[in-house]
Length: 376
Image (tube, rainbow, N blue to C red):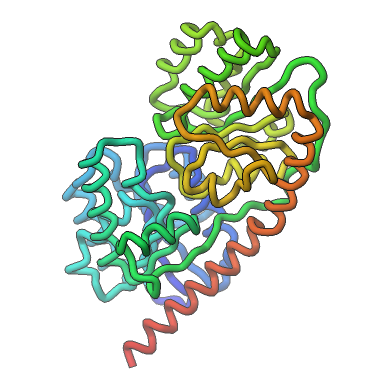
């Protein structure tokens, strides 16, 4: 790397459709090419590998998904860092950051930034697994020079739990291109369309949406249908569950799409029943589209949604709570409209893409300046 641009090696573990890959793509495609040179390390497990390559970025495929403690991935990443000699290393997510951290004996002279897209120890798992994952986060943060949290709630928790010092932490919320999304629209008169954009994994809590649809059908007698945009390892199991609950005929399973924007136009209510989240882009996109949203009380949900002001917050893991919230918005159209308008205003105020890009740009430049001062 011999150019005068700021050269950054970006590392993300998965190329599957999801918020992490979207976040990174928006970042590297949004910052000025005259000032930055990005190299992307990514697993060859999904469509974003080619998305980055087609956009003209240098892409290095390293499998980071086959196992948690892969010595091969650690060595490959360390060798690439020594070969490229980037000004900055930026790892996204716990797995990618762990692989960088494990190789710091050889790469410690290259500044290392870690973005936490949600905390691994907040996952829906047993006590000892959470304790172990907390130690992993603490280890990564001890090796990283700076940490970004996309979620203010997660950032506060990291400091309170002594995972990271306040001086190493920067909060930079995700952002979206607000101009791509629609203004507030009217509700369907006959059938309520409930939308969800999510990977079909345990994290996203889709089984609770299926339970809610069953309650709406058999308890509230409300005509609803759902459009679920996304794919994942639980696809077949969730469809069987929907058949069991008698609602599969009310669900349109779209599968994975490159850009879900056309589906937001069809939603009357957007739901995100996740068990854990960082700062979910899809929730922001739904609000920007003028759709009333319902979110579980994850870190990201608490950051974005102010209950009964710009959305509804419900407890995690409850189909009953989700059904009641949907029923309330269905029965109270004036409330749904008020929430939708406030949600759009919140998205415009806090989650503009340019704000995200400008903050990250300043963060990168300051980190480079600090590094140069240390060399003098």
